[in-house]
Image (cartoon, rainbow, N blue to C red; front, side, top):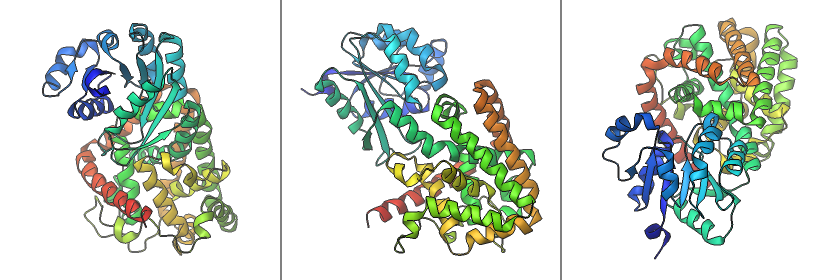
Length: 437
């Protein structure tokens, strides 16, 4: 008799990811029991009435019967929730979490669950609406008293058909900061800047084009999610702080060179960043670029033809690569633990910096084309707003800033998600094809 016939999996927290885990595991034949906020029990019961797993009122009922208890709660709340339910974990069980920042999560388990309980955490490196097949899934075996427990978790995660990567909590947090902090800062700031100038980018001719389509779709996808998905990484992960501050610094310094007309200095700085970040690609003439304009032009929210001049300063993307250079970080080193969106972020920057003529065109536009000057000013201010929020570690302010911009784009989320999902599927299929060559 295998683990599936004898073990119970418990989920504390049935948000988007918790619910996805509950569905996948229960449909695979596991005995799953889960709970969400106790005061919403009746509402949750009605909403989940057709699910195959058992819904109970609170985490005590989950913890007392489960052989593996998985906490699917916001990073901000993990210590509070584990403090409440952790002591009820049954003897010999295993606990884990799904937060985006693992060091505080592990610390909470060490403090609040009994010493006879093992700790094996997980992190699926994708959103709840993305097919987990082939996506990275990080396993963190922090405290394992016997091999049987590790084999049990291996059988559980095999149901997702993901690429399993084993890391420590410290390694996980460093890698996720390296692969997400700067790019999240870029697209959060993009959305905020568009909101401040009261412009939907797909309605302005200067924002219509291949790279612009990718930037718009990714920014809207981020803002269509819940704020805490990004706040947890930005505020809780100590490695992310330095990186988000660097992104604001890079943006400010590049924008300063633009307004001062320092074209040679701007080009010298960006070429140094290009040669560092993309060295392996530049040394390999056979490397196939992930993206191109023909592909990206398929995924537009606009009702007008693309920008015929194909010009944009692309300050947001220039600052991403400059930040990586200033941080002495090569994003390709962590591609095994990257999210689908990060691989697209990387593809967009790769295309801009490697495709003949595009980087020079962006530099020319940054210096000579004043159509983007106001946009770039608002973008620079937006990066400084987000860096201040992170520096002060203020979750409430993060939520306020996020939801203010979210409300601006709200009417377009349904269409943007439809087009964005199609874009992501198409690009990830191309990634798969390229990687298998």
